[in-house]
Image (tube, rainbow, N blue to C red; front, side):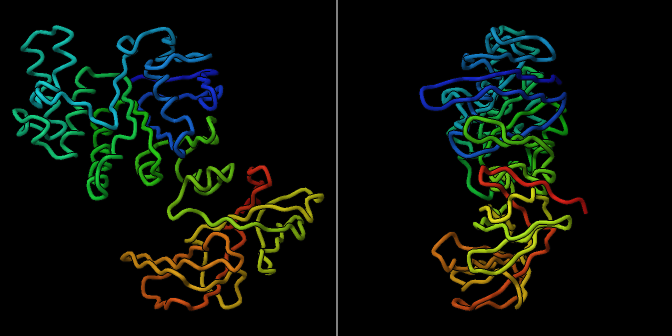
Length: 362
């Protein structure tokens, strides 16, 4: 295992890149970097790997400055989205490739390949070539090739993006088990928040080349620092509504929704904010059916997903639809109007610059 630290690390392109970033990842952690396309997450991973040269800053592995070191000298291994297997080599030869290039003894190579194949359940596939493997099997071979050198850090750049939905679920389970078996530090880049929530010890949320927030999955879900973090964590995504601040006191804040209704939020605001515009955030699972509720709309789409159901309500002003989670036994018809309420402790409030207002302690 190895720790990873980046200090003031940046990579500036013409119109985008990674802004100066500080981040510390401890031995044995499984850290997931999540964010929209172009936010800088893959750039950060490539800088840690040594595949790109930084504009400024340092990369330290176990306290050793490796900023000027080549990828092979950092004690890292990387798994790519595209698998990058050699089509003319067998599974065993693909896995063994790093050791073969290092001219390790044949007996050692055979023993290490056998051990890795057992860990990844590839023992029956060692004589096959990549074209005879499924997508999940190819990804496991790619992982095997990466871990055969016993790297201190394993970097994974959107490794499941080419797989179908069912296989992605299975491979998520395999990554979690692999981390437990190897106890290796893993840094995993994805745009899929479900992968982030299910795999990570800590999540790094990025936007516009910057780190927005770092924390445990549930901490980011409950107390996002910005709108960007709130949107990045949780599925379906959080509902965001423009509101006007009506009043604020020691017990919370009252806001007016676009429809003119009133909602209470357990957030602390300065007194001079009354009359200002803000954004209210409400997660679908926190909306509860209530005929007197502040939120309402006509059902334009209803999704029944086994134990969970979601109603999509048309916004009266033509804005984004409001999504609400309903009990699975709730009968809904298209065109029906439903009203919802939310507990003040479950509502989030964001300033005009996207920063979350401090929430009141329960």
